[in-house]
Image 1 (tube, rainbow, N blue to C red):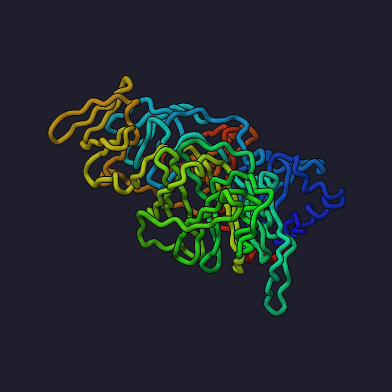
Image 2: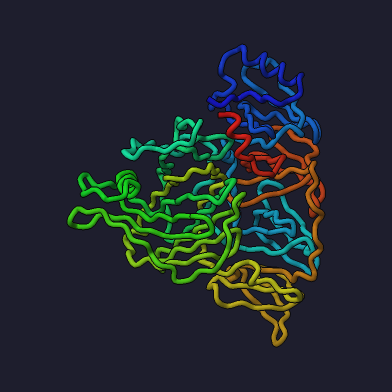
Length: 488
């Protein structure tokens, strides 16, 4: 079992924590709503009480008579309410800053110098145009269906009684479980098995993104469109892996990464009771590496057009046309590292409605002109002196002046030459993250249970209602596999 007490903290703090341990194992009770994760990967449940300043965090545990103070330099992040907001956002749009921060809100006005954004979490914000790269009056990615993993029991670990003998290296022991949950991430082991997500209802267009980290090129599979209806009887396939996939997921699609390549397979049961597997050919692809140490994988599914496409780190990689439209109607997803001997980590899983937009952000940017894309994903306009008032966008074009109703606009990308880069993040800055998409970075000034006070590069001092946040991240670097394996 992984320890919950920090092992590389200052001596005074370690004494406090080990004193608390004398009260029993309640330090790890999941009913405590917040979770504090330290930079070495250890974590502690309890309640976030606030911050006296940027260096000291106050934490309450049910076995402590008074709040405990921790140095923020020891911290990785604070997770609020198991990663779920107590006050859900109800905004239509967003503004993206030059430092990649995304501020959810409702666009109220655009002038030559500022954008006015109405927010539930920080009131009305007036943002300099020069700090903004793009905005949308209506959310492009849509409703968030799942963000995590924050709770271990949101997923089911499936262990296999495999007839094939697992070949171990000299001195290597077989892990207890094929997947282990640690610090809001799932880690694969050397034992065969699956990770399964239940209770999802997916729309006609959706996207799944996740961070994949490994020490070498990962071999991992994302299982999609599973009907979770395994056959009662079926003639066994020659491959044990195929038999296991169908017996636990039923008919499904399987997207496999292997080195720098991607392959898409379909599994189903024929009418004669035999198990079928086929590889679906690409209809478009380009060379793009899946980095060994870390990559963001994004899978987009369009049931109406029967397509599935994959992007790696924001760049298009592969597109498939699915001939069997029935398979796309199912909702089950999962992960598999069958026969993979390399440890890997899956984190930051996000499942959302997808607008169907296929253009990358880079293709819409221009050095000298503002670019407007409409909701039909086809029409776009460019110009200068962009303003908005009374729910109408005004754009001065080269051949005509445009007046566009705000409800018709998908995104507005500001001219790159007019943007002034925001200063790079310092080690003292933190990221306040919303449930779904949305992040604000800045220096933590102070905090209470109700409010977080940040000093931001674009907006100066900002007071954010903490009930809308899912986490505060102090150290945005990835937790390494080394940190996890030393705790096993």
